[in-house]
Amino acid sequence: MREDSTGSPESQAGRKAASMATLSEDASLALPLRLIAAAWFGLTALMLTLVMLVLAAGNSTTPPTINFILFFCETPAALAAAFGFLLGGRIIDPEAEYSSTHAVLRGILIALLSLITFVCLYIAAAYVDAKQAGAKQWVLDNMVSVLLIGCLMMALPVSLPGALAGWTLFRWSGGRRRDWLRSFPADGPGAAGLWNLVALLLVGVNCVIAVKLLRLD
Image (cartoon, rainbow, N blue to C red; front, side):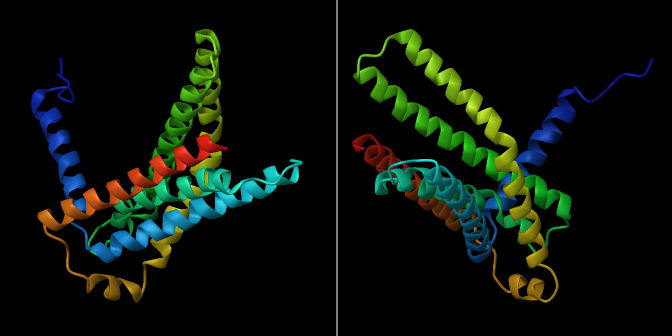
């Protein structure tokens, strides 16, 4: 009887090493490539949230406040830009042998990570506000459940723009632009780690400020 080796320690170690190598390649990309991906995904998220805001404002009797706009429009865009910076640069890497399918899957991953992080932020802010207002525990638990269900319902609408952003970024990087993208030298491990830390700090500060402003409304 033939033994399946997919669960062997050697195969598991190989998959782990491949995963770590991929993360290392993402981190060592040239900074301009990562910035292009960050701007691409950030602008895509901003346009999506603005469209949703306009649709929501049409059914509302009161205009949205600045704090509301910052949290529900700017924060998702900042999160998408951060994840695009960390994971999206490989889409336009001229040395990578990747396809448009890979670009689409990366775009979906970036979109879903942004959505999950944003929902976690909103749940934390809403939970704290409701608890300070004296809400009972079962109300808090139901509120969290409703928000998580809403996150699942938004997964597909958010994934589609993410997939489109990944595909269009991949198409944009083809042709003559590949020679231009190839002219940027890759970052070393130290510089790449520093830029990752800066990106995470910036988006972290952005999220903290946005949550505090939302709670002031």
